[in-house]
Length: 319
Image (cartoon, rainbow, N blue to C red; front, side, top):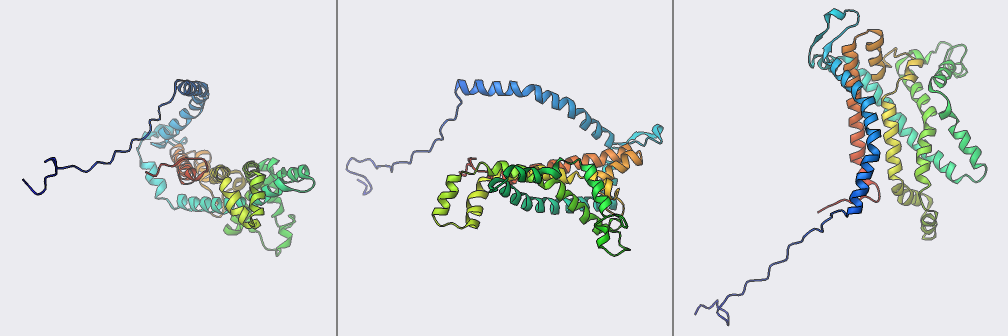
């Protein structure tokens, strides 16, 4: 008999580990009915949105594939991606894109900091909370074009109260970087209250009991802010940053009123406007519009994918 045989003459195999099975996550009949009801309720809004947006977007894409100048309608022809190659190889596009990106990053970053401070003031103002909130939200209630004209007047040499603080020969709106910074300041002044309003909605969801418990445990004000308030506000911060970034990247009215895009202060929206309504070049103008749409879609995708999973309450499968 072999030395490896057991007492019964049969070798004993080691017990195998039982495989792990994930729990089935099948929905109940009631949950499926609720989901179907949700889709049915959303369907009319989806149909209206598609009817309003799908045709203009599709038509813009179609125009971007053609050489189409309204001054020479008979010369219209299909050119494929030639317009995209023309725009993406042009220095004017990249200059406008750089200006737009700079304005977006700087203005949104400053607005986030100032908006958080204003949200905390509106949330925990000791006296006159209603008056404080009203005063903070006043700039956002002013029409953007009206606000832009007030900033233009303020920086007009000889008549503007801000321009009078500078040397008499100075005209900041006629120089590239001074004009860009004035545009940024006008954006911050106008839209910081909107950022503060969105952050205030997230701040109101932070439980006061949790803050008091952290204070009792010896957490400083900064620790309560960074370790309690900010983590709970991540969804609200994501929404505020997403809305303001998309809006800032499409900046048009402030630049149009303050500089009209002169001295290399064009944004991509101003560049598209100049080609569509000034040069009457529908092909190039539509190409710029489609590129702006693609850039906005990429920004939204990056924000949702980069920050969406960091929101509390979301389950992440790490297996």
